[in-house]
Image 1 (cartoon, rainbow, N blue to C red):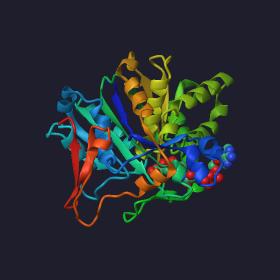
Image 2: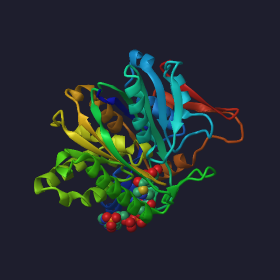
Image 3: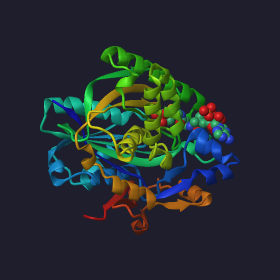
Length: 390
Ligand code: HMG
């Protein structure tokens, strides 16, 4: 039985900062950010968006009433969740009126959470072929103002429906994983911002790629030439390229050219949004599928997932016939092109805005936010969510 991605949606907030302006205000050459790091714009979540609302907005785009009834498992991958106890998935479940007989959980392993969810979903569907699983990846990446990680922040969510006989990407059976306890990036429970050993994290991202790539080749008997493209977890768009370059010599000139050309396409959305942590790999996959128009069904796409701390996994998918009919290219292009640019001082102000943590009540004006699902405020330590269409 084929199991894989049947639908994929994405959402990013309506505000962004131009990396040229950030570079100037931080005393850096703009090329460092746009070429050295490879980021052009960075999405910023206003106070009316959080990982829950971004996830719900991403899922809203793809789910029909039939899907909602058939979803019996909701898995929410995030590392910027809003509660230490309650799963962020429960709020999404309520906001989208999902089937109450579903299981709903949150998963965490840095940027790897959604990949873990997808692999668990595969097992679930193998046992229950009629069911559908909603996998959501949603995060706000925060390193702090004036930090070296600042240029690699971002905000957004991907939502995927995993099912039997998927219409977009069949996930192949073989995959290769690697886990090791390292401190390259972490966020203690008392901190709003991540701690990171930047250079070490870059090295480990590549070291883990090398381990899972070698393991994968041995398990599968496949080689570089068997891939149309490899999509990477993209903390910033130069990172995946650095990893790709370590294996390029295994292919002929044609293969190298194809993989490099397709890498460029696979970063189209990421370079305009930034790191969305666990959704980043899927945003790259989406960029590739939506922005590359001449892909043939049957093409094999490699996927490298990396979550600091760390877990790496390499797995693969096969493009399904007529997959393009199930994408929402126009909607996603409009989502990006209709965003509002912020000045650096506006960005800094919004970045510092937080919901009260002392139990006081705050009501927010959701009319400023074009998203359907928003944070409307907080009361008695409970976030108030609104679905404007309900
Ligand atoms: P930095 O020290 O500010 O930058 O940190 P740099 O000095 O290393 O420069 C960056 C690049 O710009 C270099 O290129 C420079 O040469 C180049 P490279 O040598 O690396 O190819 N450069 C220029 N290029 C053109 N024109 C110029 C120019 N000047 C310099 N004028 C760093 C950069 C990424 C380390 C920092 O932003 C950071 O710490 N970011 C956060 C950590 C991160 O993203 N790590 C990635 C791997 S870990 C991961 O992916 C997991 C993660 O997503 C979290 C999770 O799993 O949850 C982060």
